[in-house]
Length: 148
Image (cartoon, helix red, strand yellow):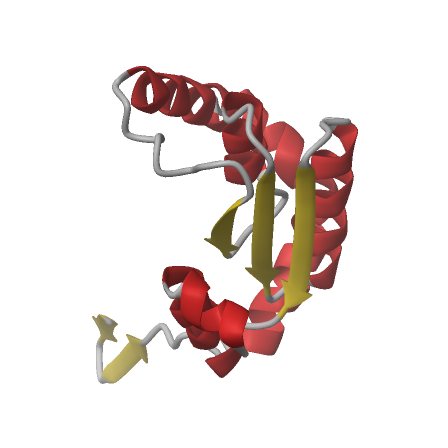
């Protein structure tokens, strides 16, 4: 909150959290340039380096053939693309985002990899939604999910 007094006037400026629809509109507008900017800022290189180090140190051994990964707020899939480049096994990526155009860019970026064994299921929604919570549960309980 910012308050400014000028003579007998007092002005208060308070930031309010944007609504989900406003955020979706903002991200949709920025979607066409998002991935190039993220790459320019080094996020793609950093994610790739991080996953390579984690793989070398054995931290990604849990991602067996056919592993499922949930990317909440997938954006243009910079994180998922870097992971898919690192993991040679079959990989199923579930992404969720509030911005439909971001999801379209994510789909393009994942398909551009041209990698066999990589599947992506991208969903429009809020990462705080019930769908996201259920996805987390089923991803953590694969044997139970297989029974349903």
